Image (tube, rainbow, N blue to C red):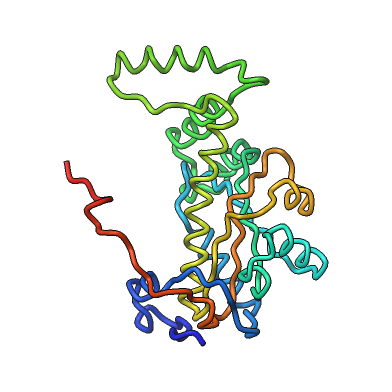
Length: 244
């Protein structure tokens, strides 16, 4: 049984409580997650920060029973997948940035749209992101970057190849996935991010193209205490925090 009551307003559950009580739960009860809660959590996921507000994420909520059973199988029949009330496949897209750049100009709240915003999304973003067929633009982009760095002293590395673009999309999408898991926790539910899955089979099941990359599968539901295998622990903070 969950120990956190649903979050009706910020006073009911502090940020620290939500974060510190989030666990990767491997077994869930049969208590359902309502569509209202699910949609609220997905909305919170999409408030995550993303590089240049290009929002490369996509969330596949598995509703078909046939697809659910196959998803469980492709997640290696993990307990978290088998007992989850909701299974959400979190996808990072590398084929939406161009349209989303245009949409940033369209949706920008200040009208008329300032010229720096138009130039950023209309000129700079395409320059940074465009690779060309078989990365044909990569040598020229690399040379331009190095020359600019010599003049300016600092320069952000552009996207050179498909791996760069995939990593870029996965970073922003992972932030959205964390928001989603914390939102479930704030509503009194739990989750388990799963990275162990048969990606080719799962992509085929969801009819994903080669520019839709599965970041993780999130199992969600009400915590069954048997789904917590041990007390939470972390290594000493000195391993990870470096002050320079």
